[in-house]
Image 1 (tube, rainbow over the protein chains, first blue to last red):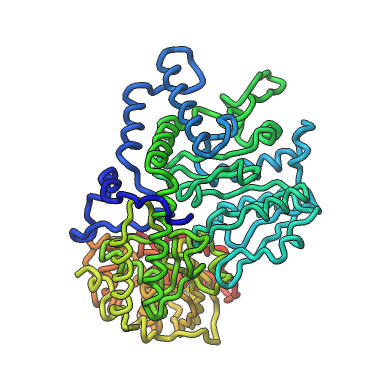
Image 2: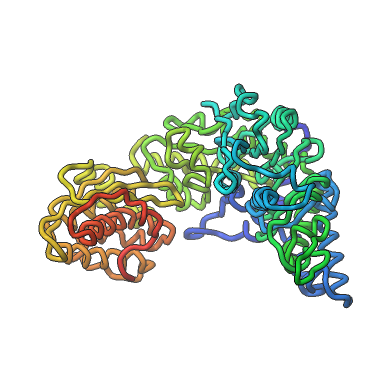
Length: 426
Length: 169
């Protein structure tokens, strides 16, 4: 994540995103800084979805007619390109609705293993005395499913804390992750703090004690090059709509041998091998985890998003994000009464920056920014325990992407000053 | 300009100088409400005199954290209901809810809503309507706790904590 790659041609990139041409709130230029919630989609992605629907739409993996064949090729072709983007095999890429579903797939697969007669499922069994480890900086999507798994199975939830400067506290890693640990689920890049967590020591410790690792990669895969195999994680999940792709499509990566042993989560059509009235056997992964007619144009759209990002270059996307992180952090440091929640230096952190403005509630800062055309997220960003950890109910969060430029950051900073003026605190 | 339309002086005044803030005794019921989308919270107590719809609201006290809209709306609420009967307070609440759900198309009646008319601008921002109704949700819930149990048991408000509507539309 160093700024060595040639700079992005943001002006050219912006032309690919039709929505950035619109105005908001009485003719103001749209300054979209909420890509951490959902990113905008380039024409290339929209065109790919439309072209698929206009020429090849059919239910995939069923039927033998020409359209079914072409649709299946498009769907599987997208899977293969996405797998390549992640450094993994196509058979290790499961399409899900989003990251939330991907994480639930693993958590429910584990509790389904408890009742499963299959010997390979044994390694996933969780029960009383076992522990599940998460972190205090998790998005609810990587926290609540594990709380629920513990509730269903009698296992105990434990977590790694967060330091005052917004880093993961690994000082007691060996005490939290122990022989009792069955899973360690953690976020790659915090959606609030912007912190990029060190994966290696956590994976090393987890594997030392025989625990599985599940990585929430929602905010990392869109923003810098990620190779799951190199990271050594067992499972990883992310959503398409945060990386220029459609909503309603996400990916769960799982190491092949694990996917082969994990019991299914959602069952029904397409995921079976043989069905008899007395019982059924299941298809090999990834089909085992894709019950029902899947999202097809969305998969094609995500394939196009990956092509787009590859053509731009993920190194460049990362370098650009780093530049915007520095500009945001430096600019915020110059405004009295503004406090960043998360690392204040652009080291091992992304351009996602959350902050509070003394004397002005986050909602009110957001409203002033909105009146100026600057669209940010306000609230707890689905990371309520993390906000509680810092003793604050809500933050303002700016999450830029490859189509944002330094002018956008300047607009954000000006808007914050305006909110202070409007509410009489500066 | 839009911003001034939403943050009228009356709202900013109630935000900076909230009326009846702080939790007080005696009270008959307490309600805790939270807006799950932003984490804003309010704990509100009501003290009633008498029973049924003719009971008089003798005190409303509250504590909470939230944006200017949610805090000001709760302050205005206390002005509008203290000293009135429960029946009158609920009629005012219905008018306030109608205004807030009106997307800016409802003309507020100042005789009924007094300072509450300042929230007409908020009604144009659907995402902020919940903020303005948080305190009212707590009031409605707290009163229900008194009247439903007919004795005035206190509760923790958990049962109604995640409903996001209040009053009638």
